[in-house]
Length: 336
Figure 1 (cartoon, rainbow, N blue to C red):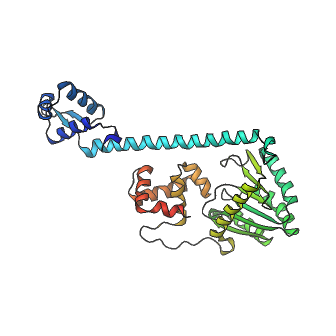
Figure 2 (figure 1 turned 60 degrees about the vertical axis):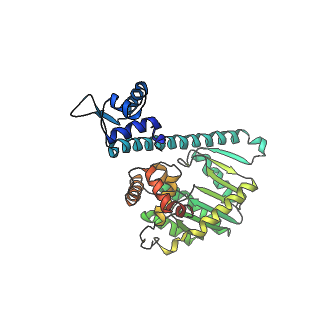
Figure 3 (figure 1 turned 90 degrees about the vertical axis):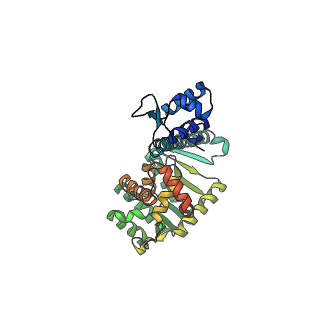
């Protein structure tokens, strides 16, 4: 049962024997009935793993290090290795996505311009203005990133006025964290007064604009929306994005109700923000990405994570994930 920690069965048997009674190589050969070479090989592995040390009173004998120290250290080391592997897989997943994105961009002409690539903030804003002018019925928006910059607020107002003047229906979802920024709150009030139905939610997958359910604009890199964007025109993907928007919209709270009021949680319950953090951590995301998706500072995101680990009595994220799964918390987070 200890092989996942790097302890073969014969090494575990030597360690177990020394836990019962410290002794020399000869003692172990006699008690276990093994060849001396096999005993010495197993002891070498025990020493490498810091499982045994020379006896205090008789250095020629060996004693086993307490399992609370030795085995817990192996568990922690294995957890760290798995976390590092998880991080590497997450980075590989990102690279795969970028390869796919590059391939799709290269095949744009062959696909009948289903995907259009935009480079840089100026090109993105220019294309959004064009799509806004052509929009006739509906604009759906995911405004990820939390509080909006002064530049973004200023750029969005003329577009909102143009759409409202032409009777285009507007629905936008922002993050709950916008309530922490008075300037953004005032901006959303302005948008609402000009016909934009605004709701807020705990987390959003990415920035997104959907024009008449015929064109969608998404960032090529969710961590840097100014770097580039994709304009999608295919009916299949637009239907899927529209369904995603409706699902998020249905669970979001109207902005006009003010700051979301979360009920007091009972024992073993999570707030919606904690559920979102648990879900995002379960996806292997870094502290920085989790904070961005919630629209909060990295410090705040780490505080929430630390509080969750404390409630779970976990000393690592790996251990926290196991205990959260055992308590059924992960299933609750996935429903959000």
